[in-house]
Image (cartoon, helix red, strand yellow):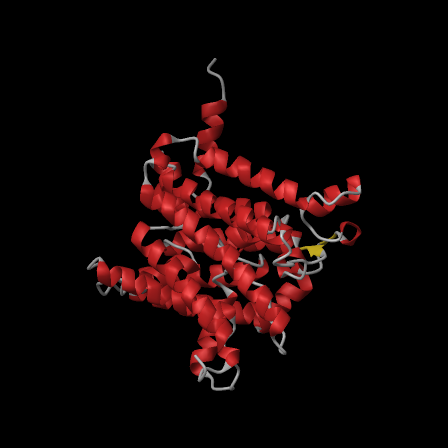
Length: 366
């Protein structure tokens, strides 16, 4: 270890965390879109409960880390002073539709690529290019002119999360109480179903991934204290870091990879190891040009929408939840609604057909 450049300690730490996440996710089929699809079309909520358990575990662990003074996440970009209302909704819808077109999210694409899925490589390349463009390219101008100005200023309350609102209202710091209460409610719903409690794979994956997200906050915060260079506080997201990973591969700038890049690499290696151990590695590619076009469109929507919404199913769905960011439920609802639109289009032949079905079902018979 003495021969390792200290600046590489951060991405190597992320690599280790990513190895765990990738292995567990591949081994136990942790996938947000699959969880939603089975919940909507097969009445199977175990996958969804596993995902919610990951968010609840991350929230519980992160709340305790902050309560004991081991992290200070007030500088996290999820807790910026302005809440990006338009970006979260529009970006979430774009991401959800793109996720449905592709069949998985950015995180799921990395896990699938670990098993030899070349469609996932196409998707990740598209996500990376779209994310870079939305950050500092052509679509970034659209974001700056249209999306960014439509934000809600919450400077009076310090940060956009319930703890700050209640602290201002009561004069007491209640962030820990609120965090523990939210985590308890989520875990109560997750564990209320006996079928999930007996599904050890889903139960384990939710717990481990949630703890790994909290570990990300701890690691990046500790490095931000001791490092001479700025270190971004982050726990896990798979849109912008995918773009950063592509830049690291194709350019030689001398810059050391950050936590996000290390995490992406770790998830891929961990998933590949899990696929190899299970003898589940096989080459897969797009069947025809139509499927390729659908994947490219979905990748563009996810890469652009993920930047607009400041996160993905893991970034907003777990990391932002763990710090109780107000953007999290808004982004989750938008992503889920976008996914339902996309799945309705692909499976039912009508993007909004499910709304008509629900409306008829709720209308009393004459």
